[in-house]
Image (cartoon, rainbow, N blue to C red; front, side):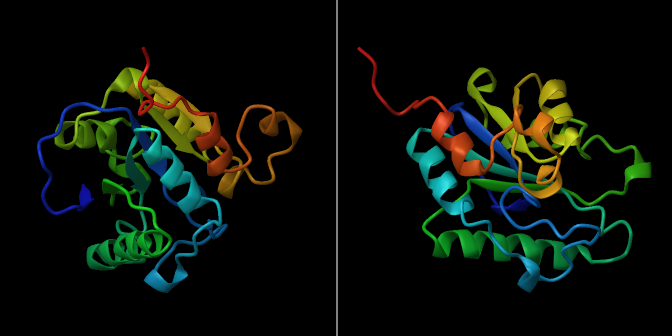
Length: 193
């Protein structure tokens, strides 16, 4: 389900950074759901990372599971308000995303949009086509990496949120922050001769 923007413009395919929300852009509340907009607290590296990715030629699309809707912890309207707060906070720090998609279903509903199923990427790709060969998924959970595999794109583990305390084995496989990942990405805006 697209949370934002309300309408999309027809655009040519471009490299796209598909980004998990909780634990990658904002602090993950271990064992709890974000149920109110004021609980959104951006990681310090989030806005600089998004600015750098955009400068390198990536579209920025947030993908997030929000089963709190299905579980009755929040309403659909509250879920939308939380995502809008994320967008406002990022804009205040000079960063913007191209779209936000979320799955409001519970784990037992067997929907096609709950990560690791590829439905959110498929929906986003219909609205705002991605150059899938040059696109990737960044997340802090195994389900984010599984989504990348199922969608046929690269997956990058960010060691914030869920994987923050995963230990040395995980640290060898991931990036300490979204900004570290952004610095490692190819620059698609630079012209090559």
